[in-house]
Length: 615
Image (tube, rainbow, N blue to C red):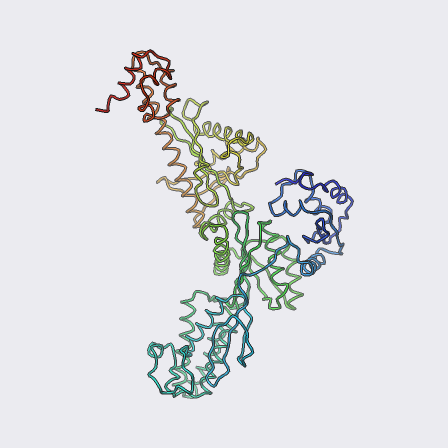
């Protein structure tokens, strides 16, 4: 979106002020008409960065466009280095809470792990901390993580979850089902001392705090020591507990063999909105998670940077390893900033394969599912577009995708079908059909060129809603030759829309995407592969159905010329007026005579021909 003096009358003043701005690093503070700071940013070159907001013809994302339209003036602070600018930016954002900077506001409050104050304490998940003498561990951001951790710990260490009070209810009733399926130690039988029970509770809390791997290592040492002292009963109990921890890890699928503490960030985008998700692993176990709306879509790298900085601005628990789903621009700067804040070295990486890459996919899936609730799309659809953007190297997920396919019967009835997918779903009101007019011999390249030229000429005319939207991605049912033919045409019109072909295998199934000089395998991106297969199948169906309908119409028009007095021009005139055979059959003799400009006798013969099969 372009900003003009009509949207912001102060642009002339702002451009003049910016032209005199220093080229040193620093922070800039955008202000509205009331003087309130609405945005804080950093730059290694203040003049270049601030100029980009007010430059003539600058294309802005909706969020940035809205912010710039409200800017009355701006202030700036010069620093000695880009790193100092980063530190200052975080401080200013925290101080002013600008409207157009990311604010991480969760939908839920904090959660706690509660250990009751009684002889045989219980471990439960609660949403509020009360003054009741109990021990509270937390707060945690994710209530789901807390509930899952408590449930898992109670099950692994066989702690009671029933409503009985101990020692008050010793031996009053038979043990419940959990005892018989070995998910409870059976405290109600009165055979377990308070000291032994508390030891199990403490081990469960250590398990929650330190993770499964650390617990397994500790319990293994205890088991070996018990075996050496010939306490085989205790060794067997510890062995069973170790097995239970490993089994819980397999069932929950939230435990990784990599025992490093790490946070995993991911951002999902769709319909101009973004949502972030962080998975926090401690000791090889999913410890907590955080998800938050990030507002309108921003530049992917910048958005991830701001999300990370805002997330850690009020947190002291910063792990040594931070994983991202996509690269960011200022990795070294942010590593340095977080290292100083955490007081230990922090590494930021983008894993490309293996177990850690799967964890980033899990974080991406979490972000996509949260975003899907806000944009009316499924998590799979959002993930498919994210994957497609990654596979093709696009800057952002394509919201509007157009796909073209040529269909013909030899050198006759040549057509082109255009289908549109909006946010991963077919948008049939924007589908369009092209009857090829300038190509008279079978030539897919020439036919595709004609259709593309006509389509984008209509875009510049801005008269048809179906043609007035510029796509984020063009797909062609064809290979490198199609891409090489169409790309110069689109670029010659001043458009930079990415263009890729869709290649099929020997069994006419989607195999890969292709640029003009290389192929891109999509098999590693399952959801993206399924999406482009759906798009390719849909455009083929649409193009072929149009060709067949046109062929039937033309064949019928030729048949009309067998009626004396009906030539080719009158037959085409009739088909143009009535479109289909069914509509023509509803016309009366007088209507046929008037439309074709023929005598009543000829119209009567024509009527008989049209209805020849009625009997």
